[in-house]
Amino acid sequence: MRRFSLRARLLLLTAALLLAGLGLVGTVVSDHVERYLLDRLDGQLRSMTELIALAPAAGPPSRNPAVRPELLDPALELIGTPYVVYLDPAGAVFGDIHSSRLTGATLPPAGALRTVPTDGTAVDLSAADGSGRWRTVARPAAHWGGTVLAAAPLTDTDATVAQLRSSSLISGAVLLVALTTAGWFALGRGLRPLRRIEHTAAAIAGGDLTRRVPDLAPPGTEIGHLAASLNTMLGQLERAFADRAASEARMRTFVSDVSHELRTPLFGIKGSTELYRMGALPSPAEVDEAMHRIDREATRLTALTEDLLLLAQLDEAPGGQLDRTPMDLRTLAVDARHVLRALDSTRPVSLTGPGGTGPPGPAPVDADEARLRQVVTNLVGNAAAHTPPGTPVRIGVGTVAGRAVLEVADEGPGLPAEQASRVFDRFYRADRSRARAPGADAGLGLSIARSLARAHDGDVQLETAVGAGACFRLTLPLLAEPPA
Image 1 (cartoon, one colour):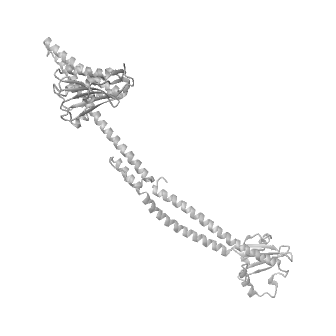
Image 2 (cartoon, rainbow, N blue to C red):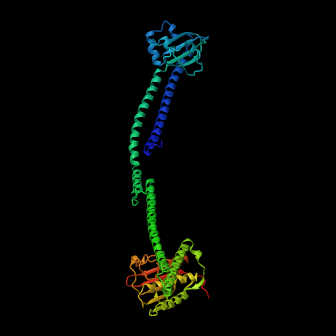
Image 3 (cartoon, rainbow, N blue to C red):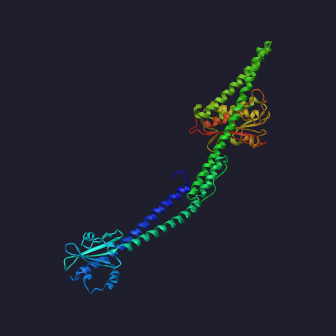
């Protein structure tokens, strides 16, 4: 059965059930008709035997010279009993009546007649030559001590039942063929949505992940539920493949950037050592300068390695890298102002509340102070590195909507939307040029800042526009009970 299609299997199953039903109905009907005909014949035979058994002991009509043979056959046919037998008390046949159309070979044998019970029970007997069956009923005679038997052939009954069965068989076969043909087309139409689903699945397997199962049936039907479920699954698969492709692209970019960032200081170190080995640094001053470059590149390499390690640790177990204690973000805001003034004494730095409104407000949090200092240092360093000297910077601190907030806002050139959406990506820089000044940021500062903020159940967000400056906003959960 598994080699057949679903359509063929359903049709075979339906045809088998229909065949079984038609066969059962035909059998039941023919059995009922046969039983009805036999009961009617039995009633006639019992009535006949009862009348003859109650008659005076005049003997068989065949021995009576007054009986006219030309009237005997129509009388027997009229009462439906073409054979009447008289048995003496010893069981011997001493007289019978039968139609002249019947021969002795077609009648039941005398030995079989003696076996018929005399209580009126109908018994089937075979003809002497085996040509047919006879229905026989016997009654004891009331006046002369013998037995009267009445028998009728079952030829008509058997022919009627056979004709009925033949008609049932032929009509059932025609009906089965007609219904099977109609069922084939009906199943084809009913399974058409499944074929369309199959074609859609084949197209998706061929790589077209945008294909969807069309609306083949109302939502409340089985096909409608299946189509909706498949479309939901296909949408998830498409997003999963897109996310995987994007992840692979980001990984390739990440590996490329890491390789470059590691290669640059390594080349500087190797170049300096090669110059020393080749004797190209004859004077102590040149040797000191080479050692200074090696130390600077080694420091840069160490910082990059530590940043990568920190990001990996934050990805694996963010909360495990924190040592939380109660603190207030105002401390970090004041220190950030001093750092900015130290980096550029010409830069105006103001300390305000969130959004530049009012004075700084309390912002108690339960956090790792050293890690938050790293976050704020990255934000301050970003403002100093990407705005012209002397650009005003505002540091806002306080509480907004039940969250502790620290802002670093500058009045620099700002960023377009495409760059603003990627500033927190690892190794992303608005200027993709590899030619950067020594010690320039590798593009991990903002990524580390956001990862540390999210490890504190907070976040770092950016609001910027071209020509409107940039505002980095650190938000953290408030401490339930602020420190004294």
